[in-house]
Length: 509
Ligand code: BG6
Image (cartoon, rainbow, N blue to C red; front, side, top):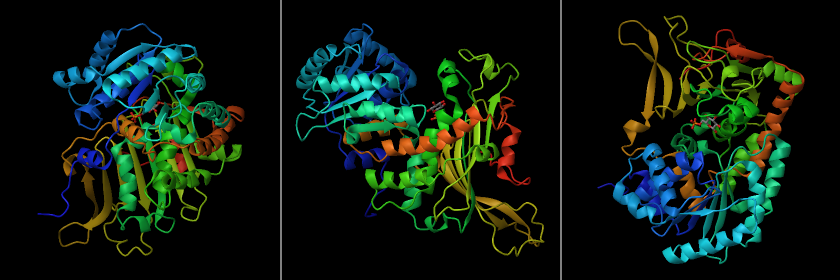
């Protein structure tokens, strides 16, 4: 009998961090984010026994709904979007603790009624005094909501044993200035420690595994630096375009703000950070911040030489970006961005990092590839080695979550013929339990007060400082020009030029 048995994630989480009772108040409860992500995540947490049984959920929005209507809507949403099928008995039991309250987020007087309702529900269900506010609304409402919650006495914990936290989602501004203002507004109601900023990439199993993989094994970490790594590529590719009426939002945003500023720079900071002193919120985020601060803002000349921006054109039976609903017919918004950047610190000096992201590409795939340097002397150079691979470590975030190490091996037979082979770890085969959705993990962390996977404000600002330098060169100098690419391709062919070697190409999934 082994001393330590391998357990499913749920057991580990449940045993490590019991969720305290609380009331979860979802602002924007009639919206898409609640239907698609928050409600299914709460349901799955309850189904896995990870929520405290006294947890109450209160949906808040300005539309009229009765509690019953809201529960019916949520049952429909969970039935459609939950990763595990809706269990009627379980939902009927859980739904007894779901309520709805009409509130106009911008009307301070209505918050007193909200407070009474929360108090009454907490008493009725023994949910205690802890509150988690989830602001599933546009960022322009964060300031008024924070102020109104404070004025209604809802933003401070009423007792030392209870908590009040607020969860917000990207976009955290459109540039450094607006991000800073947005944060000041949130700080009018809450302290930084109460604010949990979600980047859903950090809730993905494989992304969290980056930390485990790097810092719970001693074999990889010594290799991850300029002495052994030739380059690092991070790709987040999507095959979808502007489905789901994304056009108007996306056309104001573009790939650089939508994906690079947040998800991609978070991936970059996790793969490049130094060892934190402890695996806890502040040390981990301190190390990530150092990476983000080591990215030097680029001047227009550097932007022209190290970035590519593209926009998809028409394809067979597919509209061009400019023909999509809600998109300007002469839009200059990029649906693809690729960049070469360097991290100016001792570990990574001189190692290029390549980032690319885009819509309507050949495949939905997110992955990181670390390409190692060639051995210093090529002993096998003259022997049928044209098929030799380069040592590389590939971390697949989606799909087929897992990690692959590619190295060369001898092909059996009398000749010294080499071929690349894969040492492969796949989540699906290594672990029996299905991975929870990112939102489940993040919601549970917010309830238990575990901040490691949430973004601190200084990280947000450091990322904007870097991204602003690119955006402003694109907008003012117009360099590099916006180039077209065909739908379902791997993006504009010009992106290859960033690699600075005609024999190299981006790693495909
Ligand atoms: C969101 C972006 O943050 O991430 C979307 O706003 C994008 O444009 C999405 O499609 C990608 O997330 P995932 O988890 O599907 O890779």
